[in-house]
Amino acid sequence: MSAAPRPLVLRGGRLLDLADGTAPATDILLADGTIAALGPPGLAAPDDAEVLDARDRLAIPGLVNAHTHGHGPFGKGLLGDRAILETFLAGIAPTLRERRLEDKYLGGLLNALDMIENGITACFDMFSEFPAPTLAGVTAIGRAYAETGLRAVIAPMMADLTIFQAIPGLLDALPEPQRSEAAALRAAPFETHLAACREILAHWPFDRERVRPGLAPTIPLHCTDPFLLACRDLAHEHDLPIQIHLAETKVQADAASVRYGRSLTAHLDELGLLGRRLSVAHGIWLGTDDIAALARSGTTVVHNPASNARLGSGIAPVVALRRAGVRVALGTDACNTSDHMSLFEVQRLASYLSRLAAPHPDDWLTPSEVIAMATAGGAAALGEEARLGRIAPGYAADIVLLDLGRVRYAPLQAPLTQLVFGENGSAVTDTIIAGRPVYRDGRHTTVDLAALRRKVAEAATRLRPSMDRADAFIRSVEAPIRHFCRGPHPAPRSPPRP
Image (cartoon, rainbow, N blue to C red; front, side):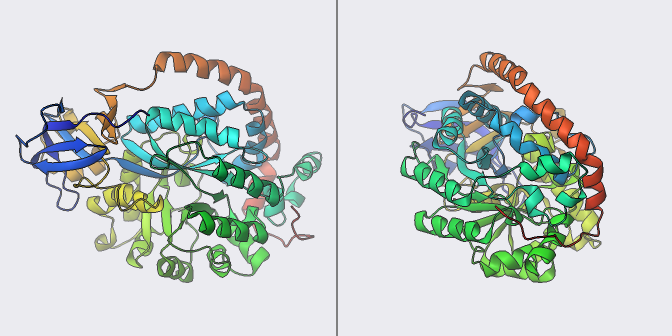
């Protein structure tokens, strides 16, 4: 992105108060990429300030998507309607091997534009390449985020064990010849991943105010302990945010008991990974002691209710987490496992699921709690709580405008409740990042969308054979993997090997 734009004043709109749910008429002045001032209509502004007419608009902080995967867009619509996480993971990695740098860039553009259309201004992207991350690949997706204006933490998603090595007994559950095919798969050694990360960090090509590096050892079971310890130390050395999938399925929770003799959370705690630098995605199969450890350490849990439900993984204990003082954020997960990138949909689902998980209404998530998870909570997961997630002087000028002329807001009686329970993202008219409208009056300002769609269609046609091969393998192992996942799960014949 170019230098900061000239001052911009949003006039005539309503500013949503996330605490009390009111939306008073407020003008907002943006300058040098930050929020310079708030005030009643007629707020003083520099003579050269651009004016954005915000009449009949509701202003909210830019949403922060605390968990997504930029490699997901080329898998849109291909996830089976009865897929579980373990069958999905069994076939996804080889499809990534076929992708060119241009594909990684195009996927990043799709991910970014989809989020921007849905009022998301920042994200934590666990971006995967197979068999290991590369500087060129991370640069490709980073370029997509930089060009669209979306803020991002790009964290290479890494593992030195395959799922068939990671889950005790899973390989033995497969029939031949699929067992031999799965046994032949190998992830890169952890030293290869770490060398790649050090190269990426040494040659980071982006302004870290906008696009920052992170680390993402994907799932504890898929990473040997030396690998996890090395990621911990590298994150500390370079002051990096780190994210990991935690206790997403019951299979993972059961496998931890076999592998470690303790829970996944307890194992990460023993290794010294828990802490304010760490965010953990999903956090479904957690015990009381796990929740206490997460609260004590300041670790953020990223709730992904859409993909959790899509894959049948379970309902995260968000009420218990919040009651214990755990920081909670929201994520869409990948668009190939949740089918959308709307954090508005995620907010509503999170709120509704709390009503099923907690029998007493006093424990249900309130609209103000949910939107805080989608703004300030996400900012904390990115390590950006001091400048993202609020509309206040000194904070980054990341603001979303929604059209109050939509029928769903007539009559406008409880703006916060109507937003959290009724909005799906279609009312977003403007998305402003660092003071620059990157989505204006329902149109992207940074990308030729028609040209992008043509390039994406060509790439999807070229990549489809690899997707079909993965689908064929998944279908060939789906029944035995599903049977295995119903348990009980036997001990492995031998320890996992990288």
